[in-house]
Length: 214
Image (tube, rainbow, N blue to C red):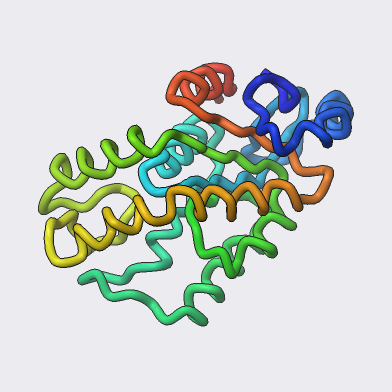
């Protein structure tokens, strides 16, 4: 699979030839853990997508395959007891991760997108249908009820409470606006960035199957 294959977003077709040319220019493997895609070695991977798209799972699986460190935005967003960090502190922690040489960084915080995408060597956009995403959110809420998901910090067990229905409504309200925001981010990315746009569970599975193992 290459960035100019069917996995690429339609919004990126105008740049497909540039990206394809970049991918075909293989470079030596860097020191330390790295991810190889289309003959190019990468050490900084940014993963974006709306709630329930599978960002944390994809990040974890690529991390296991490559040895790259994985960072979840929810670990920055929340503190124990579901206490939200102040925005300036969240931005500071995100920038500290982005400044590192190697990372797989999944999640939102759009105020840090510009800096993160400037540092990233690959952007993976998980763009699944609303029905799939919403079902996953509901399923994980019950599957992990009373327990911590791996992408959440200690002291933040999955719960059904007063925040549940507003979060589900948020998923519905932002089904179009959230996607447009990510599409805009992808369209304005620097031309050296390798972009992979995955729009179904089958495309995600094929991408992961093709990714190298250590």
